Image 1: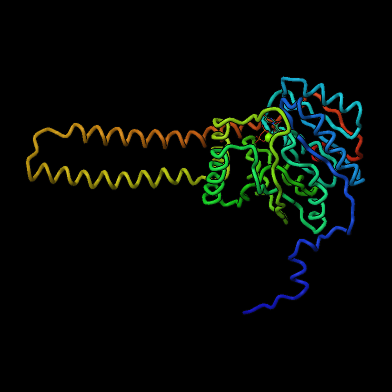
Image 2: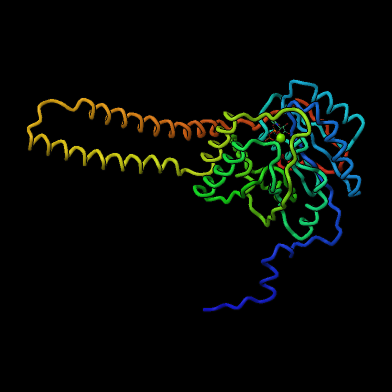
Length: 345
Ligand code: UDP
Ligand code: MG
């Protein structure tokens, strides 16, 4: 039966239904994790403040110190003294960017939350345009990179293939060329804060939450100053995290590989027996025996290692440790209670 779509049903299915009143000015929380960013923090504050002043709305800047070893924390406190818009969340040690970001999100109070890298790779000047898209009714406006200046050819290529791979093996659709730079409505942040897993592949978690989302094309700038905290070993682990937290497909691969090898081994056994019967082979075949034993041993070790990756993650998750610990918290003067406190009440 053909059910005709009515104008009402069409309207209901469009995000613009939730359309915020035109020109509505929400309160905004900016979240920025920082690890050894003393060179850029001042500039970051200056640029964000300039943009926020232009918007003329209520706002706060939640700076998360992720166990920095330089003067980042002292700088944050100095900024907080001069500017009551700033919240400082000082974590008890370095927890890594993903968790630092979650800690920041937990302490936001605004109607709308914007995630920025404190190294100024995500231009804060784009926030007004992202807000315009939010006003159309979207819950999530995520930055999609058109250019990746200051990154090596190798990093760009591996990133590209990683996103293709993850897209083909996982059921959650993770948009490509998308980082953490995004604007989220309060309900999207609340949904995200319910996901407390320790292995946090943020891009995947963002995608899991869903809600009406719209991409926003932008050019990713090179770092303003300081150094990237990534190296290839970290990137490899990040990729592993992404795959193992969002799909069990690799486990299936080892099953099928095992089956394939078993079938091949069976065929080979038939061949060996046939040869022995027809030619009454005297004892030979050490090389072929070694090849088979070594190959099977290798495949088995890989499969066990793969299982280990998942078991290790289960081990970490069942401990149910808190995601992070806060050493000291200075709240901004934006009215409201942080998301986390509301949850605990
Ligand atoms: N960062 C963090 N904790 C870490 C590593 C990085 O909070 O353990 C922050 C860092 O200060 C920066 C952001 O995460 O604001 C992105 O890190 P980075 O610029 O090193 O990564 P890239 O932009 O090169 O991917
Ligand atoms: Mg960066």
